[in-house]
Image 1 (cartoon, rainbow, N blue to C red):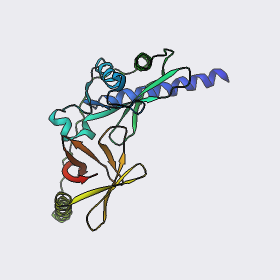
Image 2 (cartoon, helix red, strand yellow):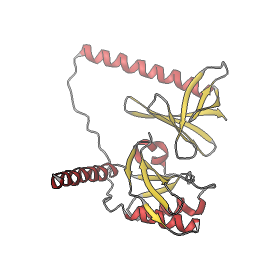
Image 3 (cartoon, rainbow, N blue to C red):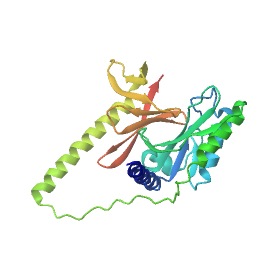
Image 4 (tube, helix red, strand yellow):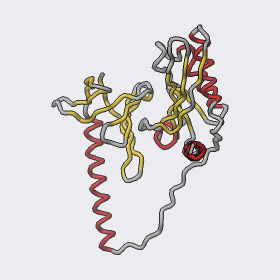
Length: 253
């Protein structure tokens, strides 16, 4: 009985490991948070810099979230990037760190095992525990493979073609209307649990944005989109008809 249970655990662990490997290859970049939750300042104890350095050894193109991004990354973070965070699970005697790679919606795509350190000095302890967490990522064999979407060729009747055209026109009209509203209005950020609600001058709630582990990056509630800061400007990115849409927002916090 014990031998059977152990065999099942090994099999399921193998499936889990392979799944993590396959998911990572479709992402070109990793964005590391410029400030982890357990430090008080940007790149505290150089933990963000260390995490970037380690992940680059796996072959990833890595940026800290406060760095300038290449154009394709700036245009579509959801499609092109994973977001690296370090979780602190330390107790009184041991510093414990876990490296987590999330997608833009906050879903964990990959999680390392716990790295530990018994060192007393904070910087040395965090560096050792993060390195040890990275050393458990032996199952990550990264090779970038851009996902390709193949559109099937289908003969469509005139009636169905007209219906699709009408549907697309409706989407375009809504998109233009949304763009006019977002670009012309100043939105005021009101703090709520886990984020902010953005209201206009009426006041009417336009959208609700939720905090992530990354500075100046928010998930949009009830939408497959994100709100983030680039330079001094705020942008809203989301998908319409499988196409990425990027709009500038005027937000006052």
